[in-house]
Each structure stands twice: as C-alpha cells, then as structure tokens.
Amino acid sequence: LQAQLNQAQKMESIGRLAGGVAHDFNNMLGVILGHAELALMRADAKQNLYADLIEIEKAAKRSADITKQLLAFARKEIIYPKKLDLNDTVEKMLTMLRRLIGENIDLIWKSSSHLLSVKMDPSQIDQILANLCINARDAISGVGKITIETGKHTFDEEYCKVHAGFIPGDFVMLVVSDNGCGMDKETQKNLFEPFFTTKEVGKGTGLGLATVYGIIKQNNGFINVYSEPGQGSTFRIYLPRLLEPDCVHTEEIRKKTATGG
Ligand code: ADP
Image 1 (cartoon, rainbow, N blue to C red):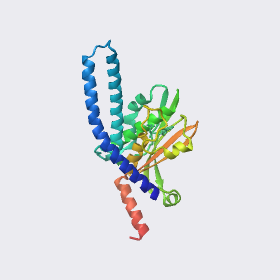
Image 2: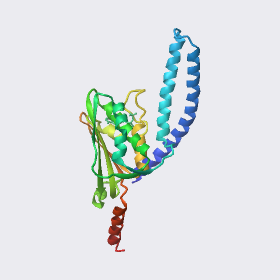
Image 3: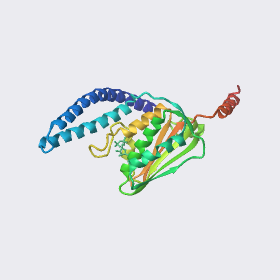
Image 4: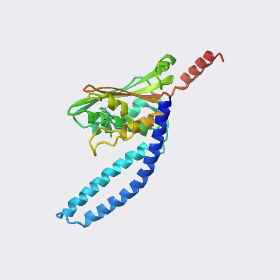
C-alpha cells in the first residue's frame, strides 16, 4: 500500500510539474512555429535557408506533439464521465485504431456478450486504446496481430487477500494483447514510470503508459501486464462495473444480509 501511495504521490508531483512546464512551453512553441511559417512564406524554395526552416518547423511540430502528451499526462483536460457500454466504446474506435496500426497488422476484436457498463469519460477509453495499440504496433516488426477483448470479472475477498493492490468488487475488463517482441523483466518493472522509454530518441516519450496508468487510477481501476520476451505482451485493465438498478438492489440485499442489517 505504501508503495502504491508513493507511486501516486510521485505521479501527482511529476504531473503538476510537467503540466506547468508544458503549458508555458506550448505558448513558446506557438511563437516559434508561427515565425517559421512566416519565414517559409518569404523564403525562396531553392535557398538552403528554406530547407533549414522546414527542419525548424518539423521540430517545432514534433515538440508540440510531445507537449500535448505531457498535458494529457498531467490530466489538465476537463473530463465528463457518463454511463457507457465498453463494447460500444471500443467498437467506435476500431476504424481509427486500424488506421493507427497500419495494414500489416491484423486487429482482432472479441466483444463480450455482456453489457459492460462503466461511468467514465469515453475519451479516456479512446486514449487507453490508442496508447496500448501504438505500443503494440511498435513492438511488432513486419506482420503481426493485436487482439482487443472485453469481459467482466469479479474479484472476491480471497483473491484480494492474496493479491496486494486489488479490492473486491465487480469489474469490466479490457484486454489488449500483441504478438510482438515482448519485454524483459527490467522493462516490465519500469514501464509505468513517466519518461521511461526503450524507444529511440524522437520515437518515444515514455508518457504513454504513465498516462494510461493515471486514467485507470483516476477511475479506481487496475492494470496488470503479462509479457515474455519474443512472445508478445498482454495488458489487462479492470474498471469498476456500473451495476444495473436491479443488480444494485440485489447487491444491497446481499450486503444487508451479510451484515445482519
Ligand atoms: P513510449 O511508447 O513513448 O516508449 P510508453 O510509456 O507507452 O512510452 O511505454 C514505455 C515502454 O514500455 C516502451 O518504450 C517499451 O519498451 C515498453 N512497452 C510498452 N508496451 C509494449 C508492448 N506492447 N510490447 C513491448 N514493449 C512495450
């Protein structure tokens, strides 16, 4: 518990710092980008200067992407949680995800037959899916497959006694797996750390999974990872399930009976 608390505090302060820096940085980038665009309009396309300006513009745009990720990580956006079905939300993202991972990778979708109600901002689920699929895509060289699966799961008291960090209750489950390069133990230990990346400079920021982790914790969920080098990786996410009114009623009766009330 102490380790989780420390992690939460660390994320909180890094988030605050990153958010503050990203905000000011973004303004300055706007100035750089604006001037680069102006200068490009005035420069002659044949001059060396033109090529230099193109490079400045490219780097400023890339930096703007990174600050956007930083702001997302710092959770500066206002969220609007609402009741939604996880199957529906995933389904709406499939076209976008297919575009994101490219033609060489198959995206397999295994929808649960249960109604999977959660109270969440749908854009947070979109962000989780996009970040996990980008990582899965980067872990696959050439052809491969990514599977997205949904389901429901109940953690009972017994399980939670043995597995630290879990609390009993009803959850919906979102699983993203790939048959990419997988991860060694060292990478698995660090992967939710902000700014931890094994990708080459300019490719990774190390904020993707830290953002995913932040969203899941904000919604009182859990995430676990199973990975073997050379075999692929599976990310399993649990989010509190919103029970239908009749289920809530049954739950309450069960609790009352259990407490003798
Ligand atoms: P980034 O993608 O910018 O590196 P992330 O926080 O999303 O940042 O990921 C951190 C690291 O975790 C990656 O650099 C990679 O080493 C590892 N990783 C994440 N997802 C996968 C995956 N599906 N397969 C293999 N390695 C992964």
